[in-house]
Length: 176
Image (cartoon, rainbow, N blue to C red; front, side):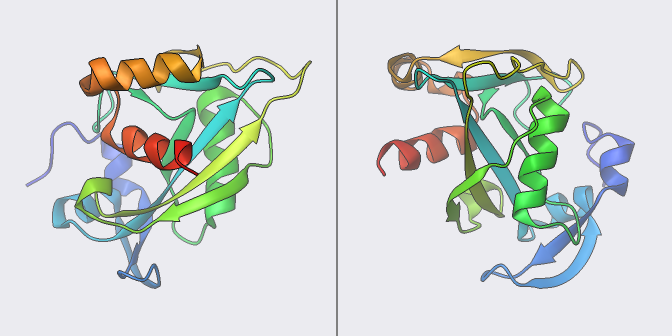
């Protein structure tokens, strides 16, 4: 049965299905992959400013997954045939209007905690004079730079306002 929260265009979005070792084994519509709980790929990007603050976006209430929650600077699925790096650049530009070459940080194996997504985290360091992020209003309610202490306090006091994947990735990133 189709999830009524998944828009039709996401039902037509084709992603690679991968195995537990992140090897491509086929392709399928995004909605079907999610309904069947199959392994697939995603990216998250952390955008830092010159003073070390992290840009977070608050997801649109129209999103099928984690609506209204604070999340990574940019994130999304890796399209079929696309590399993790290509997806990170695309999502960064589509979601917050930033053109950059993100640096890979680490990869997390797909699990129930990640929604069966093998996830690659990338980092971008904003330089003085770079344009400010411009969130896509169809994807994002708001976005802003947070001090690390603000994020830590927010996760400790109100973890439910952050997406589960962001909380997990932030903890792992912080502990590097």
